[in-house]
Image (cartoon, rainbow, N blue to C red; front, top):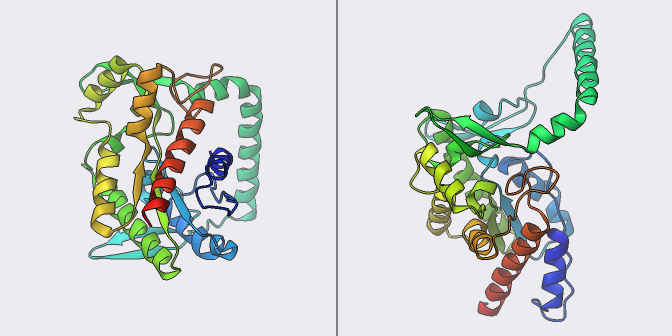
Length: 285
């Protein structure tokens, strides 16, 4: 997407005679807190003129909550009573014998992984049929993504994840204002949200008991309006394109079409939508 976005912005001369360079600071597994730290300690060194923060609701909300991610090796922002607190990584300490046992266990895991690598790769992108509380089975559940993002939080951890995410976006807004740099929150899409098969989407929506698959977009849009920063939600527009062309924007022929990462069409469509938004915003300034 970043390479295509750079090309789109330059071909359209969105910023006049100035040539645009799009830099990608994304890191696999990062949540919004990590991205805020990257902005503060890395990205500002490059003096960006515009900042884009991409939020992937499929797992970013979970990554923003230690209780949900169960990853103790990185920092978090946590809700504690009526305030937010930064939590430092928790370092695990092992004796020499325990360390050797850990390495032995990791070696066995690595060997097993290599033996079943092709099968693991196929399984990791495969769309799951999952039993719902109602006892029915439906498609649309993806490994590594949490379907609870499509419904209002019903657990303490999920309420915390949403509150922390909204607070982190407020802090990004404050950080960019302090640097007098415009920024844009871009909400990416999940495969089932933009799947061209209407029946599959509807079956999934009914299975999770949600009136819409755009709850993340609706809540994030409300937060952006409340806290005063621009937002672009890609999923509704991408769904229109997928339905119009009856072509999936996620997935690949050698995995599962319609799910997983964006494919070529998905990256192309997303970069054009972002370029459209930036072009319109630049005209209005």
